[in-house]
Image: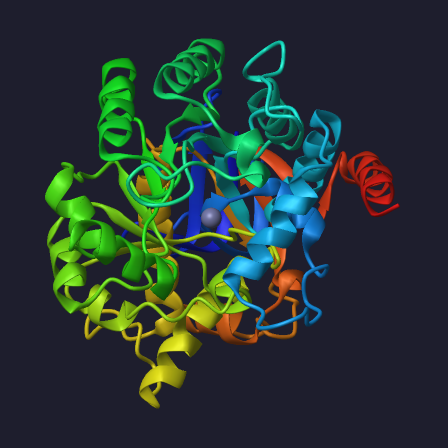
Amino acid sequence: MKIHAATALLAGGWADDVLLAIDGAGFIEAVTPGVVDAPPECERLSDAVIPGMPNLHSHAFQRAMAGLTEARGPGEDSFWTWRRQMYAFVERLTPEQVQDIAAQLYVEMLQAGYSNVGEFHYLHHQADGSPYETRTEMSDRIIAAARETGIAVTHLPVLYTGNGFGGAPPEAGQRRFLNDSDAFAALVEDLIGRYRDDALVRIGIAPHSLRAVTREQLQHAVDAITRLDPMAPIHIHIAEQTREVEECIAWSGQRPVQWLLNSIDVDQRWCLVHATYANGAERKRLADGDAVVGLCPTTEANLGDGVFSANEFLADGGRIGIGSDSNVSVSAIEELRLLEYGQRLSHRLRALLASDESPSVGRYLYDVAVAGGAQALAQPVGALEVGRRADLVVLDGDAPALVCKSGDAILDSLVFAGNRDAVKHVMVAGRWRIRDGRHERGDVIFERYKHALAALLA
Ligand SMILES: [Zn+2]
């Protein structure tokens, strides 16, 4: 197929009258700017076309809890009291409900301009902790939801064995998450075998956090995935909370990021989610390396985590991507906006996440988040150029925030003044999944979601 865009953000920058040719596998096979007379067989788009945004960190089921954890409880409310509420919610979820919640969420992600999702998946077992007859049951549900909606998914089954540094025993609320190293390796191997032929499904691993795995388990999991797929992504929650940092120091004498970098070979496959409490030396080491830092600004704000020093990290050459994490918000625009605003509020300055070469904050943030997200999810996306998959977003030039804008002002307006109405069409792998803001299965999926939520909230 061919599409003709009035203006498009290509790998080399904005270009007008761009003809994009997309092959049968959904990859871009030619990009030709300056084609004033578009061939008759192509679809003409009068609006701006930009790359689809990867969402590198999601826990799908938590979407159904959004808005249900915002009332003050007894004592001080914190990440840790939220986590207790989340565990209580997890107790009740069935595989069907997980699939129905995930499908609704993925429609919303597509509508928000996300074309890929990294699903950090830890809900493996039945409510009493025993495995399902098919050990991949819950993973299969997540992937079925992604397939129904057409979003590309990097599925990251979580290794979770304990509740504290150094192998502390798990608590009852965690029993649906637990696997030993052998069971986990078998799960990952099953998933890689099962989805090998699906070009939109990538399997990686996610050792949950240094709170949840021992050094030996972590190394074993990394060795196992490396044997199966040497380029598979590896994600971990790393330093989200000050209590986590204090407990890590008490256990090892080192901070979490410091311990990880000193203990494991952290290469370009790695994504360190919530490196919120990486200190200056740790940020510098990360920036000098090849791993991506996964930032989830709306969830980090919602949970009262803190603010990652993204301005210093990016100035040092660090790589970042964004994630919707708890899915309290499903909006790439909100994540990027809050990322910059967190820096502004901390430093009492403006326009911090930008560079001399790329002074527009909207453009700079969009570029770095697309590139970092593509790397973290190990998907062949990240730019509109030959050889990459055709994941793209068509913005609505008639949205009030975007009207009469051109060049980088489009992305500045999108990030700081836009909303979901700014996203018009979304393509994944050469196929339109959102047209005029709607998904073709949106109504059916929403009915199933309502049914699941009604049962959960009864
Ligand atoms: Zn998370």
